Length: 262
Ligand code: IPD
Ligand code: CA
Image (cartoon, rainbow, N blue to C red; front, side, top):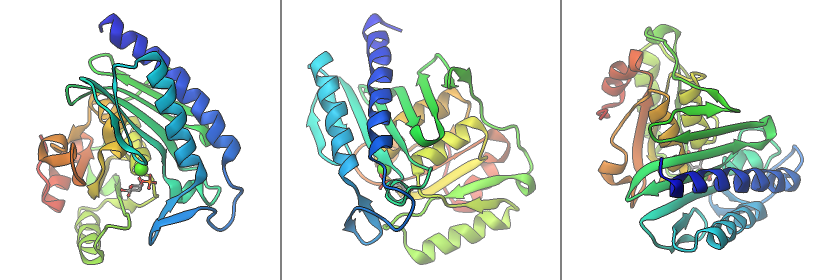
């Protein structure tokens, strides 16, 4: 790893840790959702903007030449090294005082996901990955599960406000027909992270954005996951399907939901 990337990797971890403290302090208590609706069942809280702004300004002061793209403000700076942030992923969970949400910061070098830093403040887990250098949770190496039999597998089928009901049900049925048990827990990023740690054996989402996956793609690659060609299929610019799985059930899932793997 070049010095330039090492400096960014170290700085980004400190920035995300600070952002995690702020987000945790600001989280609403358990209860009905506290926030604003961007769209039916698509939540935004005051924290989303605050965290994106904090990370953007912190990165800008250290690395003014770098590009920056966030879920809330879009692409605000360009550069051959480009940071991609999801300030709160799982905002619907965050807004109800639930624990499944995270802050996700990825660095792409010429469109190659290179660094990934993800913090889950409520459950105190901190994930880091560098291309070619492994993936870690709280400093310990992580790896996909060794599950080979779909009948003992657990797979998440992501749901969001853009999911079409018929398509969602068709894919749920196809996944259930493999023998897998399914989950759908409201944070696409966390689900990808769970595949990287082996807590899930696969994740499929019919349409997801770059900021949800940019950091997790590095974790998944380094943790040995099979991944569909998300970026090559348009994921840099628009919502795109993603399938990722441990190799033992990857082909079965790929056939079930008709999504090829790279
Ligand atoms: C959403 C969550 C959700 C996924 C959506 C995302 P947000 O992000 O990750 O699980 O299904 O595709 O947009 O709104 O919580 O940042
Ligand atoms: Ca998100």
